[in-house]
Image (cartoon, rainbow, N blue to C red):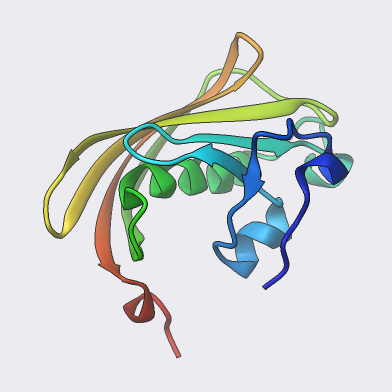
Length: 145
């Protein structure tokens, strides 16, 4: 798996690349500095993340929200998770060049389920708010042949 350096994306040095999955790396790459119960993530937005209106595409924002939500649920374990539901509210827009920070929170976790929420912001401006229900699983069970 590829490991990305935060300085190559003008991300603060305290963040690190978490080698999650190739889809996230293709959209991102995304970075994190803490995990559950309160994940903090970072993503430098670029022109190729924008839609035809010149603002970051909602699908890109939802992908980064899912990353933040999942990191909030795994609690530094070797577990993985699958998103069962994800509800997103678009509050504001984001533009290329901005640093998007995600803050996730584990609300409740059982043996098989996690309930999480996250907020994506640029500075003090909230861009997206999310809640999700996740199914916890062993990492080798998350791969589909």
